[in-house]
Amino acid sequence: MSSANVWVLLGLGIAGIILMSRRFKKAIKEDFGAFIERLQLLPPPQPAPPKAPHPLTGLSFAVGDIFDICGYVTGFGSSVWASTHEAATQTSPVVSALVEGGAVCVGKTVVDEMAYSISGENKHFDTPTNPLAPSRMPGGSSSGSAVAVAAGLVDFSLGTDTAGGVRIPGAFCGILGFRPSHGVVSGMGIVPVSPSLDAVGWFAKDPSILRRVGHVLLQVPYAESRRPRSVVIADDSFELVKTSADQITQVVVRSTEKLYGRQVIRHINLGEYLLSNVPSLKRFQNKNTGSGESKISSLKAFSEAMLFLQRNEFKNNHLEWIDSHKADVSPTILSDVYGTSDATDECLALCQSIRNEARNAFTALLKDDGILVIPTAPGPPPKLGSKEITCGDYRSRCFSLLAIAGMSGCCQVTVPIGSHEKCPLAVSFVARHGGDRFLLDTVHTMYASLQEQASTAEKCKPSTNAISQEENAEIAKEKGNIAYKEKQWPKAISFYSEAIKLSGKNATYYSNRAAAYLELGSFLQAEADCSTAIGLDKKNVKAYLRRGTAREMLGYYKESMEDFRYALVLEPTNRTANLAVNRLKKLFQ
Ligand SMILES: *[C@@H]1O[C@H](CO)[C@@H](O)[C@H](O)[C@H]1NC(C)=O
Ligand SMILES: *[C@@H]1O[C@H](CO)[C@@H](O)[C@H](O)[C@H]1NC(C)=O
Image (spheres, rainbow, N blue to C red):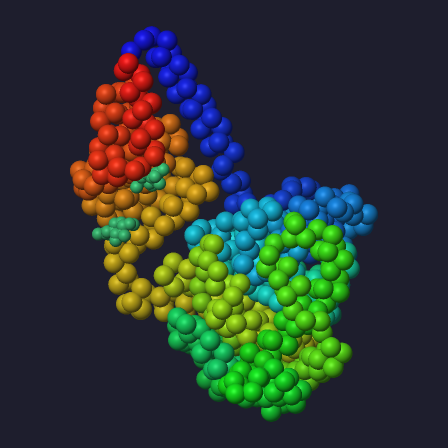
């Protein structure tokens, strides 16, 4: 080999390493990708004693990028929206109220594109990472706000909830998420999605912080907290949950018995109750059932009515902007906006009556001191990139649950309740419209007991411990693959290492770790891992290719050539191997 060639190769190698380390620096997601922008809104000075200090003193918070902050552009989950709108000239009153209340606002967080999804996946700003389950969706639309709280970056955060935007990410990220009664918290200075459903909500890990924020935003006068006189379990809503329904209801039942006695617990079939107490729902259900089809369930009809209102009002607010920015709006939004027929006045009126009648029906059912118990979501957070949340059965079950408070305007809180197969589980409590304070007080009282029961339930459950080491190893590998795709090489390496620790005889785990080492420029480690992989699986083409690359970078050209040649024997048409062989051949000429 001529010395000129060696220099070229060395140069290339160094350039590669520099490039890789650059890529690596950029790739680490700061703060779990929760924030769009950091800023600081500081509270006014404390009043002089003996006056009480501000109620939220010492707390930090973040707000979804759908709330206006004076001097900043509100992005509404879309970089195109941000670039076509001016900076806000006023701060949303809810944000001001919290700052006046003594809390420090530290930033704006990612929301789903046009706040029109519950998945939390966002192409414009990248998907925030769910801190409790990194391979799963964080939930949306208020994804960044939920992640910021779950990761402990702030004490609480604000989001908006049209059809689940606070409740779903709260459940997916394993934290508390509160959706107040419709209309009780001002929506001024917030980009509207569907005003008859929109609600400002907030997240916290600590139930007392959730309640303190409530005191400031709800402006309710002080009152003694009431004990619930009925805890009503909506049995049919739990049939929409695929796994862990029993685990969830058991935890709630045990805590309720302990705190308030068995006699407060009741069971109800909510679908039947709605059908007989919301006359318009039956009409809607009949209208939406084609001849010969089996009738959709009443909970599903309830959710169809909600989605109908949501789409229609969203169109009214945003069709004009979408019309002129079609190329930059995601297909799911476009298909909802253009793929559905326009609303007739008759259907709109019917949906409005469903809303009003439902609100009365829940007031009659729950009165001032009743809690309705439903699941927040039909199952664990779906895997990142999976489609189930935008179509199909999961989505339909999800909205059937979310419509209960969404349509009736009742308040709802989602409470974390342990985990199932390493994914957070949640339950929801609903109180009548206007029962916000009672609901926050009840969660505050029950929280510790619920957590205690949840951890007991998990320990007693043999099935979770029965997951084999191999399965856990596979889970770790999957997480590693996701980190790898996100170019988080060190994180990928640590997940692959975990997989290897759990199941040390799998060539794939070593070979995948080698790929991450290659990206980091750790060629010796990469080579060693490939050799182990090849030892375990003599036909592992990838391991040969990766070892060839590592050896080439280390300057072992002969050995490198052998690896690539062997890869070609196993897979004669592989272009990568072919190119490498030709490249190395030239070196030897
Ligand atoms: C080894 O890993 C592959 C790929 O992840 C997986 O399909 C296979 O089941 C694993 N084998 C064992 C024995 O764990
Ligand atoms: C070469 O083989 C590897 C391993 O099977 C594969 O991942 C890669 O896509 C192949 N490359 C080409 C260009 O065929």
